[in-house]
Structure formats: C-alpha cells, structure tokens
Image (cartoon, rainbow, N blue to C red; front, side, top):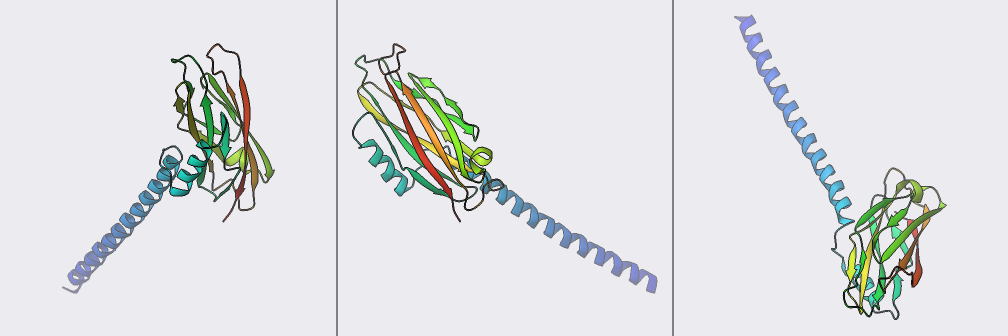
Length: 202
C-alpha cells in the first residue's frame, strides 16, 4: 500500500515537474520569438520610407536647398545595432520629357560598391576613423527613387550598424559620389559627393 502511495506521489511530482518545464520552455520560446521579431523589424525599418518628424524635416530642408545637388545631415550619431538616415537631393534639368533620373533600390555592406540606376550611378566608399565598425559592421541601404524631367527629388540612404562589430566611440566616414547624365545621352554632366561622418554612441 505504501509503495502504491509512493509511486502515485512520484508520478504526480513528475507530472508537476514536466508541466513546470513546459511552462518555462514556452516562456523562453516566446522571449526568443519576440527578440527575433524585434531584430527583423529593426532591419526592415532601414529600408522603409517611414520617417520620423526630425527625418521628415531634414528631408524637406535638403529638398529646399538651391541647386541640383544637396545632402544632409553631414553627421549622424547612431547606436550600435540601429540605423539613421541621410538624404540626397537630385535635380533633373533634362529638357527631354521622357528622361527620368532613377536610383535603384540597393543594400551594400561596409566594403562599399555601386548603386546603379537610369542616368545615375552612386559609388559608395567607407573609411574608418576610430575602430573598424564602418568596414566590418556598416550597411548602406536605399529604397531608390525616380525624378521626372524638370523636377527635384530626394533619395534616402539608411546607414545601419552591427551590434557585434560596432562599439561606442567608433567613428567612420561614408562618401557617396553621384554621377548624373541628365540629358540621357550618356555624357556625365554632374559629379557630386556627399560625405557624412558617423559616430557610434550609447
């Protein structure tokens, strides 16, 4: 009789332990899923056109600057694992109605590269000042844009940083050299460079 009671008690304790372990496992799984979703959302936010109030104001300021080329801001303060945006204005002074300036959507890593387009080409170069965050942990992304003849447009550039490769105090430059052929005949008429300083902060 005592053995049966002990067996029953042991079975109940085992069941309780299994239930507790199951609850702990589900809790940990929920936390992991939440963490992964947060990382994915942060990554996606680098490419979306959604701008906060300060970014929207900066975009308007750049668009309203005189001339066919402007950019801003000239410096960014970014937390590790996050991204901030800069904006580049291009003016299409083509007299032929059908010729647009198009910047393709693209993402580059710290090694840089070229963002193509129609009648545009943007060369991206990164140079570290302090640390190696820029070359090893930076990402450059743009959703692209299109500017019709006789119009001005702004394309946004999201500069992101990797939490594992970027530390507080790191600093680097991002240079974007834009070549524009506004008349559509292949002759480069405008070559301008936008340079932004990136400081990694807490």
